[in-house]
Image (cartoon, rainbow, N blue to C red; front, side):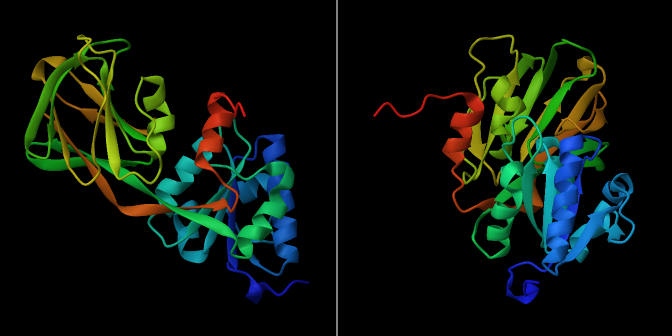
Length: 296
C-alpha cells in the first residue's frame, strides 16, 4: 500500500450523477483505487445511495467541504457547477472527470482517470481560481433574494420570446437603456456557455472581467460589453414589464417584480479548480469548438 502521507491530498470527496452507467463505473473505480492508496474517501450522500456504498463515510454536499481537502466531481459541467456553488465556500480544491458532453470544467480523461488523478495527488497540477457572481433582488429598498453563479446571471421575462425594457448601470454610472429579450451577465468561466451562444466574447479564465451580452436586442447597435469584475452592476427593469425572472447558472430562479431592482457583483468566495499539468485552455477551445489545428 502507498504511503498516503506522501500525497498532497489526504481526504478525498467523491460525487457525481451516477444514473449514467459510465459515470457509475468511473466512481466505483475511483472509490476502490483511492481507498487502496490508504486515503480517506468520503462519498456524497446521494451518490453513495445510488452506488450502494454503505461501508464508506458519507456526507451531504453541504458538509463535504468541511471534511475533504479535494473533491472529485464525475460527470459534465452541470454536475461541476452544482457542486462548486457549495464547495467554493470552503478551502477545498475541486477537480473534474469528464463524463458529460462539452467538459470545459471537467477535463480529466475518464479512460486514464487514475493516471491523471495520481499525478494531481502527487502535487503535479495547475491551480486556477475562478470567481463567482452574486445576484441580489432588491425589493422596497431591502435585499429580498440572493443567488450565486459560476457561469452567468440572466435577467429575462417569465414568458417565452418576450421583449423587456431595463436600464443598466456600472457602479453609479448609467450605461444604457435597452429593449431586448434580456441580458446575460457572464464570468470568464461562463463565457463559453450561454453567453457564447448569444454572441458574447470568450474571456480567458484569468481575466478579472464580466461580460454583458444583450439577448436579441431591438437595436443592432446593442453590442456585448466587457467591464471590470470589481464593479457592481445595477439593473433597473421598467415597471411596465410585468414579472421577470433572474436565473443563476440556469438553476436557481428568482422572481423580479415590477418595482424590484437587481444588483450583481463578485461573490466573496472563489472556486479553486485543479487541472492536470499538461492542461491548455486553448487546446480545450480547439477541441470543444472545432477550431482549426496548426497549418505548419
